[in-house]
Amino acid sequence: MPAPIEPASIELVPGAPLIPPFGIGAWQWGDRIVWGYGQGGYTDEDLRAAFDAALEAGVNFFDTAEVYGSGRSEILLGQFLKDSGQRAFIASKFTPLPTRFRKQALLNALQASLERLQLGCIDLYQIHFPPVLFGDDRWLEALAEAVQRGWVRGVGVSNYSETQTRRAHARLAALGVPLRANQVEYSLLERAAERDGLLKLCEELGVRTIAYSPLAQGLLTGKYTPENPPPGVRGRRLPAARLAALVAFNALLRDVGDGYGGKSAAQVALNWVISKEAIPIPGVKNQAQTISNLGALGWRLSPADVQRLDQAARELP
Ligand SMILES: NC(=O)c1ccc[n+]([C@@H]2O[C@H](COP(=O)([O-])OP(=O)(O)OC[C@H]3O[C@@H](n4cnc5c(N)ncnc54)[C@H](OP(=O)(O)O)[C@@H]3O)[C@@H](O)[C@H]2O)c1
Image (cartoon, rainbow, N blue to C red; front, side, top):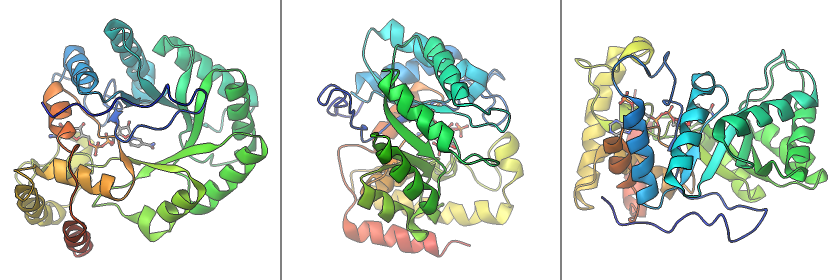
């Protein structure tokens, strides 16, 4: 078990929670299609142990969404939190479906999330993706209203481009509410947020970047190879050549990790995200994965190693 880190500073600034520097993703907690929940690989007790191990180490930021497992993720998270008797920093997300028209739809969805989570207030409530058909003005107005009603402490967006982030930030500012975060895919294998200038913009605006799929959905753990591809849909969309190239890349991550007392490929990959000032939220299925991922905390890759990894990732086919 790694040394405990400082607990999230959620009580330091009432009404304006800082986002903790590391979180745990809970998409796996109920999702059958991508992650195989309920199909024998991991149980609710495994998830509870994953949750408890994080709290024990002082990591109390959990990311969920109304859509994960059709609400199952929020229900499990709410139950684990209640049973722990502790406080945590909970982030959830609103799904801006084209069938949802009115501002009230967000407030209703938020109420349903609060009920499943057994909470009176969510620390970070995010719009899951930019709406495809209509603009997001009514959702941003609804987020501001949710803050005023005390149902939400901070608001965020997810999968927003640079232009969309700039606009949402300005629109929310006009409503008197700061945009706290943009949650986007970001890892050694997915660098679009860097190339598009999104990370830089977020830094300028004081918006935190939350990095989802920081382990590239397991590919940066080194356990998947052409002979042992990820199960289910994850494996089906992966060319064997990509997996073959990743064998050497993960060996490099382990090699770098050796210089820090034997850090694993996953720990190096997560530390790389932290070194870019983004907040990784690796998804976990059991206690061992939580404990292993927490080994990314309490140390820092040197700038030279970050550069070496940047370069090697760029050269991947
Ligand atoms: N906003 C969005 O649109 C969006 C999209 C995706 C995800 N997210 C959020 O981001 C979180 C993280 O992303 P993600 O779950 O897609 O991908 P990820 O964190 O890159 O990968 C998680 C998966 O990697 C494997 N894993 C994790 N730690 C491991 C370890 N130490 N050793 C070995 N295997 C390990 C597990 O799967 P296996 O054991 O099956 O390999 C786990 O389910 C999600 O849970 C969710 O909260 C948000």
